[in-house]
Length: 200
Image 1 (cartoon, rainbow, N blue to C red):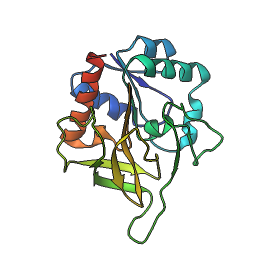
Image 2 (image 1 turned 30 degrees about the horizontal axis):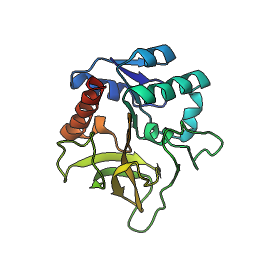
Image 3 (image 1 turned 90 degrees about the vertical axis):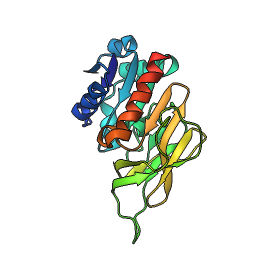
Image 4 (image 1 turned 60 degrees about the vertical axis):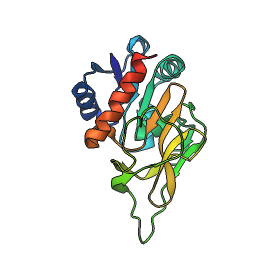
């Protein structure tokens, strides 16, 4: 079972449908126990970092416990939530599973913000999520804030500067783009994530 965390941050239905399409059994839940019982956990999300305030202390504790023993995937805002925090809502702390704070993309004459559209990735490290994904594959992004490039970044992207597009650290995974909206290669990433849960 894949537990998809419901904290009212959008894209739940599309994420659940995408996991069902690749043969998983997704369950949308707010139950801390359901997360602990699941084979893997997904933290989706679109919108403002302030939405993560809806994740209460018990749910945060369960997410941190899950990250130690089973695959946990953050998507878009969900990936940003894996970090210490974001300048978008500085009073709200992230899960601190990854070090660093997310920052605003800086618009320019050639790069509008929010960043909406398809981008390729620049791989900077080995990746279980990207196994078998062609180097020139493009993925769908929609965001105004982004995570820093740290040692846990395995692929970066460029728009108004470089930022972490895929992160991996132990059982913790994240994609700034939306694999559920990125066609066949996005579904391949979800299959790779499921494979990690089978091997957990």
